[in-house]
Image (tube, rainbow, N blue to C red):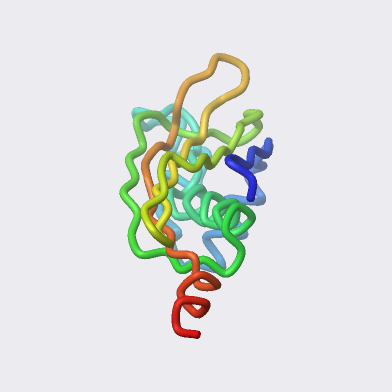
Length: 132
């Protein structure tokens, strides 16, 4: 089993718009560049749920078939379109079949953390093996 998984991405405004169409979250801070330009962020920002969904996909690579028990997330800075960002998930600890996973999104240009937190993932394969 790997201890961490990291990927890089560059979101475009079209990605934010597509996620809005899928989720129904058309908050103008995500989809309206004119509105966002006159907001505290200065331009559109990624949906938090978009970032968390990608992090969840990475935890699946760490623990295939794992059941997410919980997660705790915060967004200390915005994630903008056209920024090269890095998503990373790292196993912090393991207790029986439950893993504590660090979650992070950061910009590659200056290392600003835009999303961070932890998840608890239960290894389903180990759970079923315990029943045998």
